[in-house]
View 1 (spheres, rainbow, N blue to C red):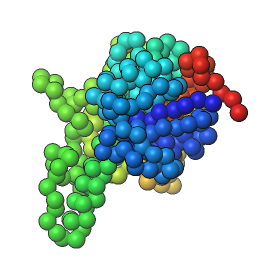
View 2 (cartoon, rainbow, N blue to C red):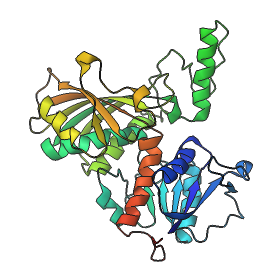
View 3 (cartoon, rainbow, N blue to C red):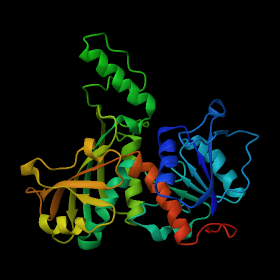
Length: 343
């Protein structure tokens, strides 16, 4: 059995990683949580003691390190874990577009894991859930163009953003002065912000939108894929929703698409709008599947479908895929030579 480090273990994604390692019975003889020095000594919900990620951290003996601590930490510490013999699965954007770093969605391009050189990147949560749905469509009919619109929950920003939503909503509902926004540039309660992440000088697209475009092309192996994205932040605590407008090379009717996606790994079709059945964040929360519904033709353009996609961004959009990658490493025997699975 192998030894696993979880870096960023006290954050929303890190705590979910720890929970999923237990839920999925990952064959680890030891799991060691790491976080900033201020969190050192804290116990996790499983009774594990958090260690400080600092100059005195002992990095020896780990086979896998799951990272969810931000790009700066990943840039500094991922190579150190690799030098000490671990394979790093990183949830930040630090390594995603590096040419020699595989960017993996477990259901989409698992074979790319064989090319890793010590670091494997976990994709952007919005791109990831969309690609679980788009890959089977591409395999069946070819992707020509994608118009991607997302409605992203506050958990994608972190615990402080979720609390900001709660505090603002409580104040408004109780007719009290609303706290000034600290995490977002505007109030999020009862509002929609057409900005996820930041704008760089000279670019009208946000960094989140650029990630969706670039990462989708890399994961699908379609560098010339025509894709555009608009990402908005909505007053939802957890789960991202997406409207996908998908033009294919060959015609794919809605019923054929439903049958195709019903067989796809990691996908659940919920598509009976006349009965009020379609994917909802409230029903996707805590689930690992990506839910898809409202599958219908775009009557304004040939060979084009509209789909509504919902997924838990803390689970499949981050922690679940990271643990799935670790499982792939075991199954494809891509861990260091000293790692072994045994009773």
